[in-house]
Amino acid sequence: MKQKGTLSNTPLESEEIDEVGDDHVGSAADTPLRPDAFDMSDEDKMVKIEGHFKEIMETLGLDLTDDSLKGTPKRVAKMFVQEVFSGLNPANKPHARLFENKYKYDQMLVEKDITFYSHCEHHFVPIYGKVHVAYFSSGKVIGLSKINRIVQYYAKRPQVQERLTVQIGNELKKALNTEDVGVVVDATHLCVASRGVGDTNSKTGTAYFSGKFEETQTKNEFLNYINAK
Ligand SMILES: [Zn+2]
Image 1 (cartoon, rainbow, N blue to C red):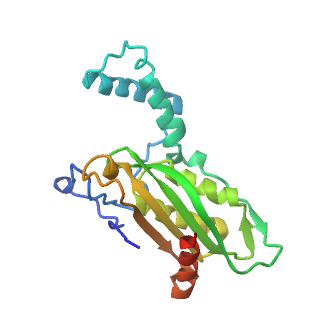
Image 2 (cartoon, rainbow, N blue to C red):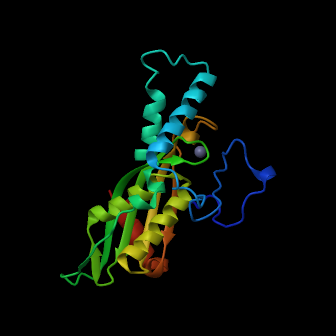
Image 3 (tube, rainbow, N blue to C red):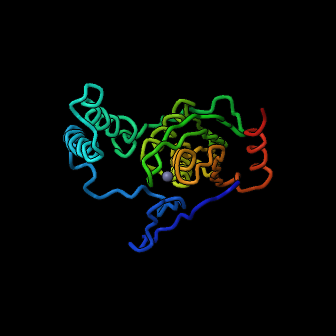
């Protein structure tokens, strides 16, 4: 399991900012948001982004009077605010309801192969892959669709894979009321596959192990389950 990058709270000095971004180093476990991030309404954000994106396209020399292109700035603005970056807004956070674990099932619960689509925050191109989650019930369980929704909520942000992994792990601990949580993320980064070094086959693996999952035997049980065909 490769752990790329570091998770610390030290802000990067301006001269340290990597213009190419191929190192994909994240700076913090929390998404760096400004305090005024949601002062503006979604409608106002879309109007603003539409204007800016139109300018980007025009700067690139594209003819915005063309029938195929003229709707693009508005589509991109809508997609950013309402879809692919909707997980920035805490108002969209899924509420996880806990149910009694009636069957007294006390073994590991694994949800494997949760597909996600996210965006690299260094290049704004897709990161996509699978998230595998495991936990031991604290006496309560949540619906499997809720685990999926937690994954999608954190994926719908500009991300680095390490942060996505940690954010899912931390949220599951809260939602499930347990320390015993494991998360593994296998992802393809289009910024690596389609540009930069142009490596089309590499995948990046990140993991978060807490509580019982820090024990080798439990960790291996989870990893063996993931790797089983
Ligand atoms: Zn990138």
